[in-house]
Image (cartoon, rainbow, N blue to C red; front, side):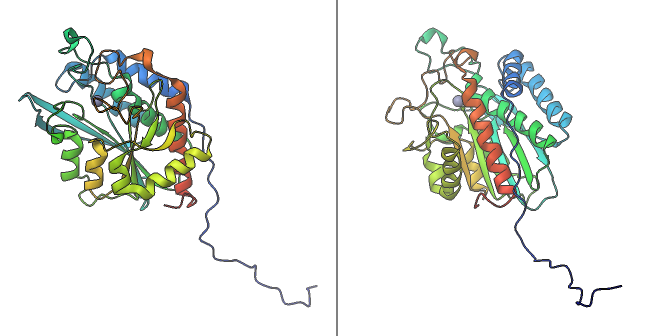
Length: 317
Ligand SMILES: [Zn+2]
């Protein structure tokens, strides 16, 4: 027996729409443990044993999560003539995928607390709980989470070195030496990504992220989408729309390398000409006591949403 009706071929409509990706939950306890662990190593100043040990640990963590890791070593001289070795740590998920997003942070900590209110502390290093460790702690947890929740996209993490050893009040090119080196020596040479996000000082109490000037100038379309998504998720207390001024951070050189990149960076005092950053910035107060876990969690969750929404084509970038 067979139907007298002609058996229609199953209707398949060619569609480019992907299934909506599920955004995993960002685990704050895990991320916070990565922040604490960095501080346990001590001051992460390039050229020290503590810095070397931290580098080995960071590489091992990425490998433990199954990422492919490359360490880009360079030698540099900071503004005062001191020579420093640097290591940019590059870790990839889905290294063959054509669609890619890059997430960056700096992992070194400043060798002097030259903004400390107490002059006696000016030659002491800073712990960098927020300025350094917070962005790295978010990235390690992002890497762990994505490795357990497959994503249809390539994700590249880059931990830049020798970002924070610059000349306060001096030439802006004395900062961000690792990203300057990377921008001139990309791995691979023709490396590109759809867009980039830099994470710097994301977890201090009282943090707020305005629209940073170079991000708006070079990647305004990225900032619009990311800020809108964050605000729609209910985080408009952190992701605000005020003009935050331009900051010479690693994203300047990521943009110069041709990747439209925004900086998620806390600039709570945009109108303060002395310093628009939090009062702990480049002081010995930048330690675990100033960290607000909620801010770290929110930024991690927003970045996860950005990545999975980009992977399914619904972010609009
Ligand atoms: Zn700094």
